[in-house]
Length: 402
Image 1 (tube, rainbow, N blue to C red):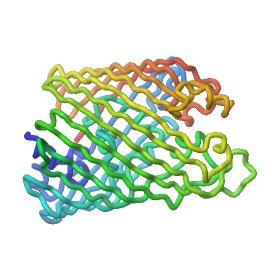
Image 2 (cartoon, rainbow, N blue to C red):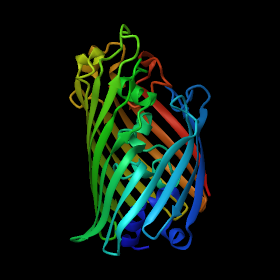
Image 3 (cartoon, one colour):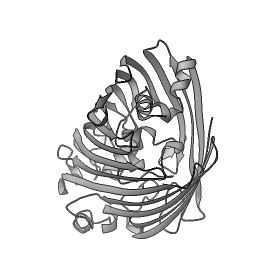
Image 4 (cartoon, rainbow, N blue to C red):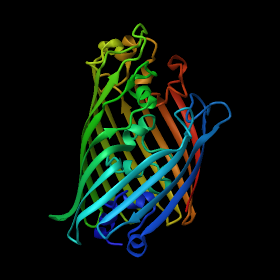
């Protein structure tokens, strides 16, 4: 498969490879139906990850999805996916509509593809976000949590809106462009991710805009990307304004800038991404008057080695600072005295191995050595004061696709 053909696939209505819908299927059949099942196991020596993993381990992680795509005309396609996801106390397994969209191609030639998607859309962020739920398209059981934060998965995963996209030849390579506008998914997990508690009120009347550019050289050997976004999450207070943690009516403003780079050789790939994520709580007041504007700084470096089609090895370092001006969390711990300093950062060294005994099966195992608890979910760890600074995690995963 050459790079031009691969780029065409990536620009299809649901990021075609994400749903297991390939161009050959679309050329020969109007309808395709696919899906996958994933079961995970997590054990931690301290703290909890996807359930009560620090006791005897947790099997409270599974994903089941069915997706379908239909070609109405040569230029118009539709696609949708329904997914059930259990992830400890973060996701309860209730089926959700992951995406449902129409994709219209204005131009679809070898040199250029231009189109528009509308509906509930996968968000084009970084290298992995559009396919983060499909085990076969991600390099590890858990994506680096410094950028692909599972606790805010719904906010990062999809949006109700419109995407204008294009893939075109550029000097020395190929350029993919996406421009998105819409209303993001906001739920209680987003409150935990950005407030660290379940607020009495809720988010509504929210919108966001995002742009992404990925430039590829030499058939995808070198890839560099830039993602920028601005979200406005409108917060409406609850019925009891006397609560200590209640907030004012107003907007939580999120601004993200991410840089991505990847080098692909025949047997190995080196990938890195860096993100600045500004959080502006000034309109909400409340407890956030102590630190009304904060910038999260994060990055990861990842080396993946492919022994052959069946076996691969991964080594990754992942670094998260919830406040780039307070890298060890000491100042924030003094302000928010119920939270230890290590709750404001995390450094994760990961070693993983993957095995594909057959095209429809994938098995992975991972070891995580972590300092800090910055990305652990409050839903599984309700008392931050008892979290341990140093901890380790062992995880297994089995996936079947159809």
